[in-house]
Length: 485
Image (cartoon, rainbow, N blue to C red; front, side, top):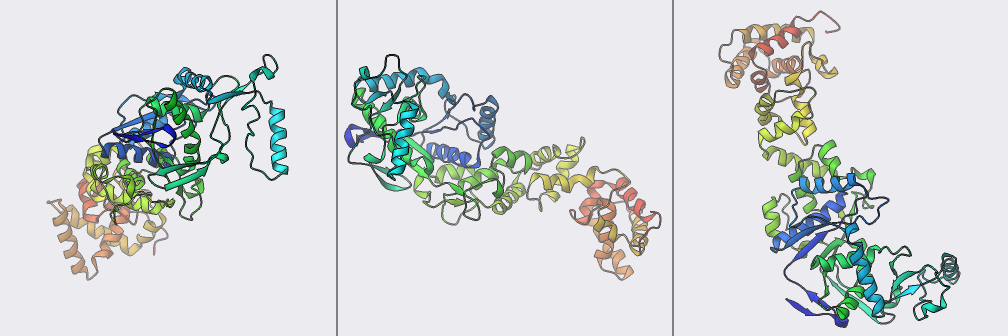
């Protein structure tokens, strides 16, 4: 479906095609990941296409490592693309072709201004407290007035009067006076295209219907529209996309998101912080988009519910604690075998994944990330003599070690090594000794795990097994006398 656009352009609304277009000059930023997610969800919600374009025209800063990291990070988050990635650097000839068409139809011109002349122009504008913009000095001049062989750039002829209006799907109607947009460069002096030209040409050739990106690009939309409208007059069927400029992400203090607010790259949340992809997916979804008070939203429900009318106009605030709490919820819901395999990579040595899987039901109830799962499971693979934390060592007083000897004798006689039976025996012994169960469980936990926190003590006994449990208790019950009191 199409409708007439302003000044001869056309607006295409269906079928939906979105694109995510990162520059591969570094890691996949958390803000970029959210932009990708919104594009992907909007396309999936409307049964359209989600495309990926790598804007690698800055050859000096673009790296294959960054390209791989971006594609890997997006895949880890569960975003797939409907066509192979488009690499902008491979499309230079097409960009130049469009620039030449604009030149041939008087929508662009050659500018022979030298750097010295441009510097003088900007200095004069500063002195007069005027906006710094190109003054169009070569707009109506004949190229023959330039010295023979002089280098030049190609500038777009932008409208000089009136105003442009964008009905932004997030920001609402936005107006900009055309006089504020100077005749910007579309081809550099070496013949290479600038971002402004390349992005517009690629969006057209890829059939993009909706440009969903950060609101720091809002001004770019007003600069890019003249290319679309000019080319529509030249070739026809150059459609104006629906623009949706989403507010940027701020830190919890309201300032622009930076390293001091937490990790900025997606891989850091995966590799260093132990966040599950479904948790980060859910959290990014709720950064600037909402569906009532619902916080936990599955991937399938996100596709079903997401639309641009749920995107807010105010910057979203990144809250690391909220992400960690959400990650804990997803960990508790995750498959034990999967969690064990992920946690095993964070445990020193070569842990028994089968034992780790068995332990997950107990470990995941309190963990907020994969590192906490790995740390919580460390006691399973520790070797004797067990290294004790300072707090654990403090629990092993002389009186506690005497009780450990009593517990050892009790457990050594136990034939049914199950959690329920072990609990019943220990409770009975505590009553016999006239003490609370904690007086027995606390030194047991220290002896069995070397820590003061762990899964339930009877689950620990079952997980370690009879022989190892008895050996660890005996090691502390018979430990040489030291500073214990």
